[in-house]
Length: 607
Ligand code: F6R
Image 1 (spheres, helix red, strand yellow):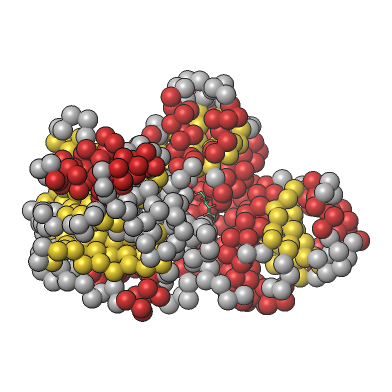
Image 2: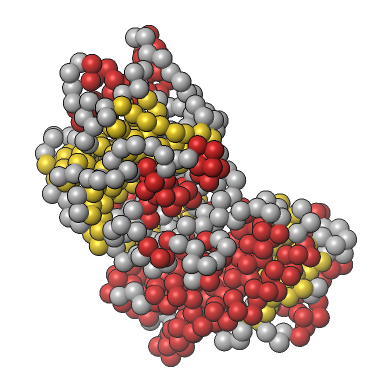
């Protein structure tokens, strides 16, 4: 939800770097873009609605003077995408520039107050109150840092704010509460950004800015301070293992396709997580009275699959809760004997963070499963599993989903082993099967990609599809439908195959596509019954089956086939792959950009 960048460097113009950094942040929002620099005591700005490439073609975002600048790529919350609502926002005199990610809940009251003092507003955004508040502070003789501190006392909501002004043309001041900001430093250049890939080509050394802190970036270095008492903070540098190459398309037409292809490696890396970290997670679950899985979207589908893995491998059945509904569902009925497992690839999803904070307040322990070192969820958690997908740029989650599944599988196995729920021979067989998954997923990509493209070519004109599965494959069906909906804009519903006859079957008429996720597990014979029901109503059946399942081959119009040798608890990992590829090719066949689906952003930092 909005990408922010700020850079101060010793030599050369900063605008081209800011432009490129915004391109690397575009997955966070892409309805408008803007860059502001300072040179010779004045602000220079270019901004407009539209994707970065389109705005750059029109305005040339590289052509701004100055060694210090800020930029923003927007996902609209307050005010439609338009030139005036694009960030950066300014004060009345065009001396202060601000970019912001988040939502300021009390902006209307602040705006009224500022209007009554004679301030003029250009936009409908909540953000614009910030530069005007800073303007008044500076007029009263405050420094930029003091002004930003004052702003944090006046605004309510969540924010990451980056500000600069012409009175102090050698610094950028940043603060946050609830929205991410990371800081980087290479030589005398300082960077601040919503996410690491923005400055990854320059450095993989990063420092976290925590909620309730303010930092000042200059050529001399970075000073961190606590807002509560003004005390200095000595922040450590963290070296992250991500590389700049991982955040490039590497010859693929889209990040999404590249990330689908990276899944075997991502699983293999996640299977190498230290066993102590996995055991500690398993121990937390075994010691809890009740375990709640909290997540949203694709992470929620990983949680649903994880629930099956835990039930089958460790005899524990965690509750699954949509994080956004958690407070309104549990009504305080959790306590310090319970555990919340927050599953969030970005670690920043506000629904998940708010729910985890609520659980923590009631005394529950928090186990986090996330892909981002230092993200907000890691700071709430008692223990964190960092999945090893590397940076995921495509907005639709693929490889981060895969590694969430790989982590949950390992924790479920460790829990089953520690509690002796299943005997060690079975554990060894399951572990071996897990270890084969990188190769199996690799073979699915190699054998099914052309098939996915061909089937998408046949079906792209169909506006609506059902995705059905039973048991763990219900999660696969949900995720397959979500991917298609997100990037190809088809109406797609993931359903339990058993539930399909209680309503969704009414949609089915001659030629209506129904996709069945049909591994050779104990759901297979009942699923065949559901296939027959759909066929009897003229549905066109597309099945994801285990190879050489001749019965299902006979019943299906189109097939995706998956190699033998996958344990039922892990089937979702290879079986989702053809559906990811199918969605990708449906989107590209329809002329859509799968990396930037409309109205979506990579991390959703609003409630
Ligand atoms: C779907 C997708 C979203 C996210 C959801 C939660 O492709 O990416 O549904 O899964 O917004 O995001 P995280 O995992 O970052 O909490």
